[in-house]
Length: 258
Image 1 (cartoon, rainbow, N blue to C red):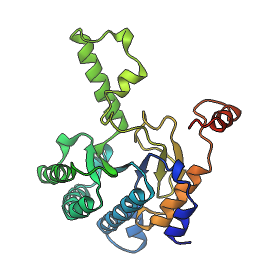
Image 2 (image 1 turned 60 degrees about the horizontal axis):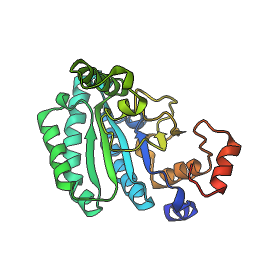
Image 3 (image 1 turned 45 degrees about the vertical axis):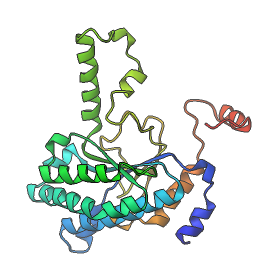
């Protein structure tokens, strides 16, 4: 079934506001084909373009992509260097299309660790797309959830030490406000490609009530049709947020979104 046909099956009123993705399987995709791992990452950039287009077309408001984790810095230096170079080149190449499609780029992570040229190109793209008011494409780069939560705790501790915050007043909302991107709502749906069934230190705070979707497809093979399939699966689930199924049904019947 084609992407337009699958898209037509989706309820436009129940499109997830925020979709987060763990883009896994680039290296294994390349290895299966006797290619260098870097070729898988290059092909993965093409998939980023396709899925960004699909998300925008379907009405997703936020798309967060796990681009590079803090643990990825421990990979062989040659691969790290190639990835950082690729990110910089790809973002510069894609900026005109992002503007054309009204997509705004944002990033989050331990940006001090990024090579200067890569960071400069990312910041340039953010500046060039700042006026766009369509899909927000958020790249988690040099990111890990434990790093993010640790940094949030440090900020709260500094406020408490300076007498600006009573520790007794700290709530989940207080902590959430200190996260890397408090302006972005928690993901409704997490998609992980590559066949593994784990979260990999990604958005641990924000994924508390997200729906999880795992697929064996490697990221370079994940296309628009596959993305629509993930959204169809999401729409066939009942999100209860700690309530019973009957409570959710009753509330939905009364016209309240759950």
